[in-house]
Image (cartoon, rainbow, N blue to C red):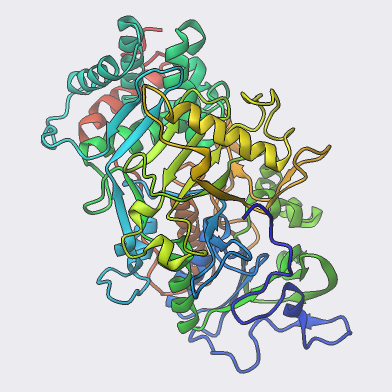
Amino acid sequence: MTTEHTEQPQDRTGRTRRSFLAGAGGVAGTLALWPAGGASAASGRRVAVLGGGVSGLSAAHELAERGYGVTVYEYYDTLGGKARSMDVPGTAAGGRGPLPAEHGFRFFPGFYRNLPDTMRRIPFPGNANGVHDNLRNGTEELFARDSGRPDLHVPLRRVTSPPAPGFLTLSWIRDQILSVLDLGTRLPAHEAAYFADRVLVHLTSCDARREGQWEKVSWWDFIRAEEMSEEYRTLLGIGQTRNLVATRAEVASTRTVGRIIIEALILWGVLGRGLDGDADIDRVLNAPTNEAWIDPWETYLRSLGVEFVLGAQVREVLYEGGRVTGVRVSAPDGGQERTVTADHYVCALPVEHARTTWGRALRAADPQLARCDALRTDWMTGVMFYLRTPTPVVHGHINCLDSPWSVTGVGQAQFWDVRDFSRDYGDGRARDCLSAIISEWDRPGILYGKTAKECTKEEVVAELWAQLKDGLNDAGKTTLTDDDRLGWFMDPAVTGLGGPDPQNREQLLIHPTGTLYNRPSAATRVPNFFLAGDYVRTDVDLATMEGANESARRAVNALLDADNSDAERCRVQELYRPPEMEPLKRIDEVRYRLGLPNTFDLG
């Protein structure tokens, strides 16, 4: 449990990464995109989808249902990208499966609506609503404090009696914010009032002001964190940005933080508005991700004729004569390259990998590709701790507010009601998995005085465990003990820790000020080349699985337009906009055009 994968990984058919070129012989040439004998597409049109993460699988899903022939090229030997789960090597015993692991826990906020729609359309035995029925609501979030301070438990259920539609007022919203801050924090009254007023400013700002003004202002400056107490900075600055989306409040865009975290995730979630069905604010899956979601998705897509080429690294997207003419691919560890061809190409790689495949000619054809070089990513990676006893801690997520590494976590077995952890996984000794994430890799820890990147992998694990205990073992209770910990696992995408050049192949897009201006559209100026991924400009505007799915829908719609297809376009559901705020936003639009501040912006 404490080592990375060492053997050559294999996919479910036993093929290694090197085998995707098998049968091609030793002569350079073109690998047929649609394998001989494969299903034919009703449309007669073929699409190469580059990347098998959430955006790539979402694009393949929509295209295949519309009759296109699709082949997905994926770097790893399993699908799902950062969303996938993985097996811990050498841990299966007694007929059980290996211990389950992952890049880091994932959750499905209630404001997700595009991805849940896709999940409902993925069949799952016994589920009327497909894999969507494998989602479980978390009912509470724990804001853990250190130094013996009482922890804050925040219910995640919708409030029982919010104002009826049409009767939501700013004074009611302000009162609710103040009551929560007054009950659960040590904030001075004037600081709580100021923060509530800043939320009202953002709520009533028009779209033009959000994009033209607040996108350029950091969340730290917007809430004037530097002038406030340490409690204010920790709770409302760092806790809402670094811990949740791995971006620093000092640089995070106010538009993104205010619109997604404060409004969609928290405020409208509490009010039960704009949510997916009967969802609460926070949901997780009822089993390891591949079992509950990714594997059934792959099965469904194969039934539609989608082909998968695993262990294939995209080297270059080839451009000539105004079109993409092919894609050079090879095994990830090098070796012979092949060129694959199609009628259309959907690039669904993470931005840090996608932009390395765009050559000078392709970039010259569409300047927005070059602007992607300005997009920034950061580390947000987890460690799984396998425990001897069930340790749910809280029926939802844990946010260790005072931890220097911005630690969050979730006890997983409590939600896996279709699994018995010790019966189904490992050697029978582990009964729970505490999945924890480090969002801050560049601040010194409490054990070694080193940043996470400076630590060895073993030191990272020890430091993370210490910070978890620091937040959870206080106020007279002991939640985590060293004797209870059986082992751990870290995503093998993280390499070189403790050395001169630590690497993380699976980073997360972050949202400093101005990020919006460099995010590309799903359609490009190259008529057969389209972009999908959480870095593409979408309504959700955040590095999320929802953003990945929405971008894929937009890419498919752009492809259908370019193909003059009469197929039904993908439905794109945008974030909830409370009707009560629209008149105030229209007033603000006039004020913004006149160069005046928002009505409620008193500085």
